[in-house]
Amino acid sequence: MDQGVIESMKPRYRKQLLSKLLFEGDDDEEQTACSIVQFWKVLTLKDRVHIIKEAWESVTEHTLKRSWRKLAPYLCVSDDGGSVTVTQLRGLLKQIQRLWKLRRG
Image (tube, rainbow, N blue to C red; front, side, top):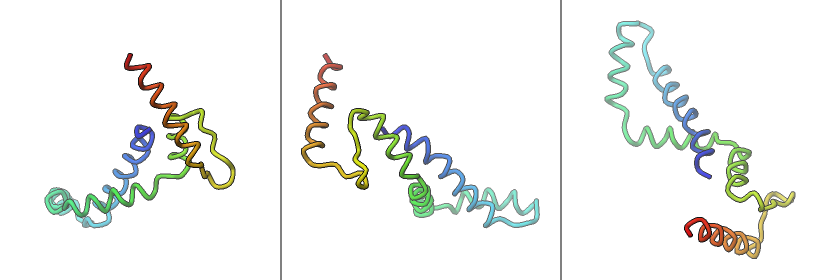
């Protein structure tokens, strides 16, 4: 499931990162080369987490639903906003466990 989400999120993260680099840079080419190195030196973990947060928030609902569909194609989501009952989830988990046991042998 996570492959589709990560595949969608990585370019969004890169875009946010490059956007931060470009908008905080200078217009002078010589200073820009120095500021790129400086940018990477001063980029903190907190900055990266904030960029990841922005990238995550930009992942669409469609991408998440599509990823779940790959994981459990037999799970039908209702038209009432996507709610699923606890009974349906228990049944889904039992099916996943059975499939997992069959694959492991």
